[in-house]
Length: 149
Figure 1 (tube, rainbow, N blue to C red):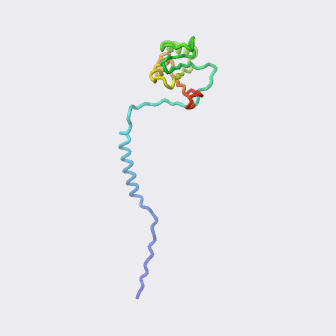
Figure 2 (figure 1 turned 180 degrees about the horizontal axis):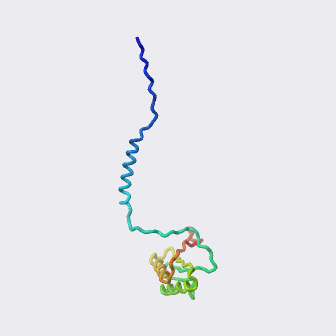
Figure 3 (figure 1 turned 30 degrees about the vertical axis):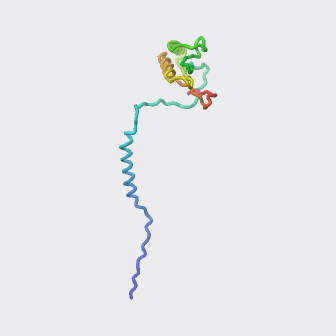
């Protein structure tokens, strides 16, 4: 009796990746179709900002403060402790820009103040000729240490 010798079959240790590629391409097409539909709202170009504090200068910035009651205060006013109007803010910003066009203009709003009041202060500063208006933020949650941005 002749004995047949069978060839030993080697095990193939390869993974067939074609089905995985097909699935990946289908998912890619689904994401490409649905991604534009997920964008909501108006397209805006956010400003570039850094979280580092402003450089110290010899001349202090013009600081407009808004308290929780919506009153405005300016550090370079005749009486910094007295509330001023938006028209006065515009005049003070214009005067500061005439003296030094590089004077930084900052708005510091109370945490409990109305956002609209802060925006009005920023608009008044821009009407006074300030091309950029910065916001003063607190660098720690308690609000003890202040840093400008």
